[in-house]
Length: 65
Image (cartoon, rainbow, N blue to C red; front, top):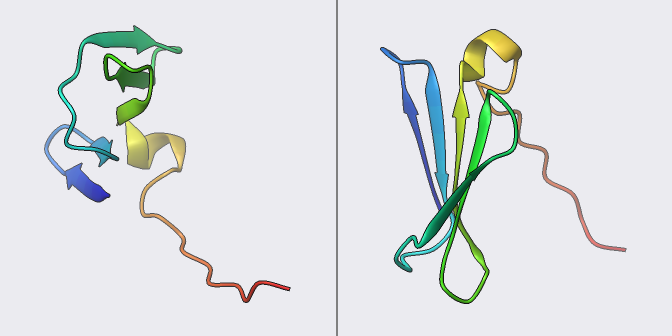
């Protein structure tokens, strides 16, 4: 997984796989999801990430029960 934030555009890109993208779907104005041929999610792009409060990421580490 690779996470990239572009300051100039306020865009957050979360890349989950190296598979080629064959389909992209807009969930709403801010969220766009890209899929591989097998239906798995390859990438999620969030527009205006800092403005809507999803950047910076807040990471919490937990111990499994």
